[in-house]
Length: 453
Image 1 (tube, one colour):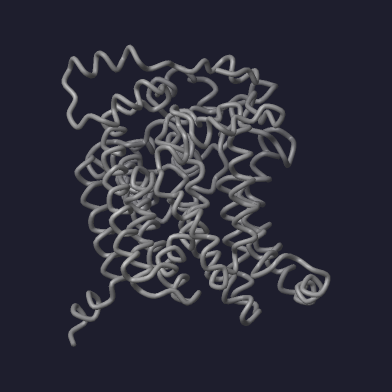
Image 2: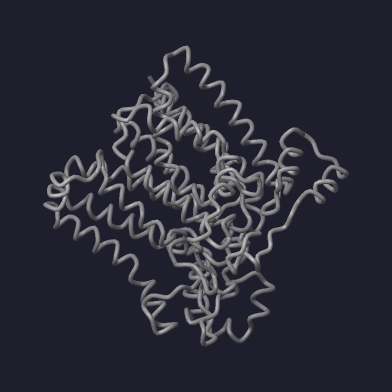
């Protein structure tokens, strides 16, 4: 049997190839390789690379003297410290992960004419986004296979998680945001945690430490994923906690590797602010006394499960095949914690975006739920399950397309706008004009003060 036939004899690999090809095709058709997509938050996440390698000034002195110019050009968009110094708002994790791709335009810029925000850098980020997405799918295949799931269950999972949720938006429509990167890192982290619990050693410990460090570096709240190591297979008891602590040398190595990844960020903050720890999201904070839980999960503006309803199946599936899910306890804690944290953020809808985009980082854990649900049912019931999933996948593809066309508005959806867009396939200019009367723009100033909007 030829390699080609072997690949397509494996339903899981076939699913990965089809999804990967579709994502590359869709991203290309939406301009990922021909239109400058360094826009919105990507402007900030990318800042470290041009500041360090082109301007050679992480203090952003050049920016301080020309703020209006750089703002209008869509470059850096730095925050400001209390004493008036510009500081890059985000941590450097995404710049680091994109560097193997974004460094090439700089290396070939012999005349030093680039500023770091031109089309070649946008293309590089688009390629990086797709690269990390595709290798994450192969890692997910290895992880689910390791947990004992069939190849058909894995194929079902791949289709559901990639084109049945808002992952599709961030793998092809809006590239360069942190969600696909976090998704990819977590898949690898879970895989190495399984390997480490089977055979603790230095190699796996270093990998786990570096991956946790990267997750923290991209979004500090990602430190919660460390619970996947602690709550592996069962809740912590006195006996297994003692056994866990006996691997102290490996745990110490993990912590050291994670710390080494984070150190440059601490040094940057120290250099700019005089403090090793600094909240560069100046003026932005959590309001834990006023979480918007119902709105965050089911709300029409950005409801996580409203815009990705197929995930309900994954959540149910987590409890259908517990024996194959060593991350069940950590999944319940982490997903619950992320929902609470995200709904407590001042801008709980996370500005522009499609659905609960900040939950995408948890999807590798929820992917196990899809596989579990598939294997729980008999062959006949699986056909019904596949039919339901196919319908919701089509719903999601339509939803993503409407978001791309700004018909599903990036921050102003309402009940009336949701109902109107859900039951229509085409939208005339008159329809779009009518939709404008249904949107309600959130009041960002009130939200910053912790008030409902």
